Amino acid sequence: MSRSRAGAGPEHVVAGPEDVTPLVERVLALLARSADALPGRAGRVMIGVAGPPGAGKSTLTEVLATALAAAGAASAVVGMDGYHLAQAELVRLGRADRKGAPDTFDADGYVSLVRRIRVQRPGAGVVYAPAFDRHLEEPVAGAVPVAADVPVVLTEGNYLLLPDEPWDRLADLLDETWYLETDDAGRRARLVARHVAHGRSPAAAAEWESRSDQRNAEVVAAARDRADVLVRWRER
Image 1: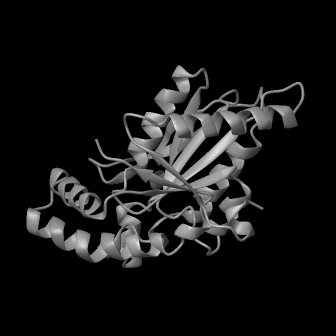
Image 2 (image 1 turned 90 degrees about the horizontal axis):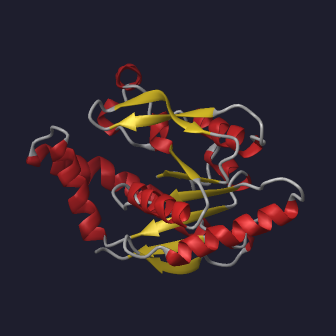
């Protein structure tokens, strides 16, 4: 059981796009402990990054992956968004008007992927993860290769900390889960700009953010205290 789920609150770490040193050091320390626990073979560390829509989860994992590579630790980045249900299925289910809510994902599929990566051993075949294409607004299968010898896997998404089935299974599959916190006004402005960049009018983008995105953000924030680490993200 992780420290935070054992009753204490999450640890607090301050980082930003120009300095992720505290996060790199944390991952490398976990990796060293993992290797010590598996004498004679490489260990693997899996970190989950949760946070509300627009918090910067993709940015954090990309910056961290680059910094880890510079420190000699290769990583793979796997996004939960690759498990969005296809638009046609959302329409069939009557959920297209709230795309991004927890029940608009193949949650069991995502948890199964994380489990496959967790048990992947040196010498095993590549595990392929899907990605989400924001231009198509659709998931794309087999887009992210996770090789068996990659020591660090970073996975990010809104709902990694939810206490509900099947999301709650992730706690036993990840070494740590971090909650990313950033300036809320900036986060919401980025979401509106993202929606406009992908084809919505400014009015439609603002309406979607205030209705759908904000409702989802509140669901995510309610699980904040389940995190092992609270990462306060400094903007440039």
